[in-house]
Image (cartoon, rainbow, N blue to C red; front, side, top):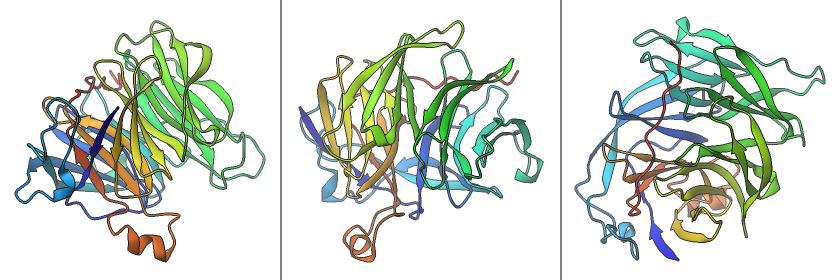
Length: 319
């Protein structure tokens, strides 16, 4: 089992940074700060003074500190509601899972011109909800989940959005989180965080249907948050409350552990022209003053080069 450590990047800490995604069209990283309603963009840039914490070990291509980039902020969009995820579209637009809707923002347009393209019919139970993690499947469909603000058990769901509209895929979800597909698209990895495990489904790439749900990996501490899949089929899982990213082989055995100097690790994604830089997002919410003093970089983005490459992102098929 391989051990690595991630190093912090320049963008200022957020409250609940989440959903990193590489936009190859713009050669930029996108991510959100959920409660602040912010969508950030940054470019990978050379890093001059590499901290000692960058020492990676045990993986091919992970020589101590070799070639680790920094992130240079490019711009920020501010929405009037929490943003759970943002994803590139085939047209160059952005798709945002914001509030309880999915918004479409045409390329170069101000946030005030974002158009609602879908909104699930929510139960009339008085529980405030919001969209959480989202991802685009290999056929260009959106999968996006919800959760209750108070994390009421079973109050969330997982939805699919495509040209035919919005479909409920799973109900009785508590905190709908990480989504990622195997390299051939036939398996979907998914985390309902409070279960403490990542599940895997058989995925029909023609129809987007889910079948044969079963446990894939159970965590020994913390809970699974966002995840990504590399080109070899390994699943990289951010561990909220664990201060780490865990990588599992396709058979569920542990492949690598990436140490992150922040307790609440929220998500991860492969970035860069070669998709060989792992970007990790973290949060400062839920930490008391003592923990915040002990974790001054909580809420920042981190990077490491784990000796693996990610899968190219499929943009949402908006045309």
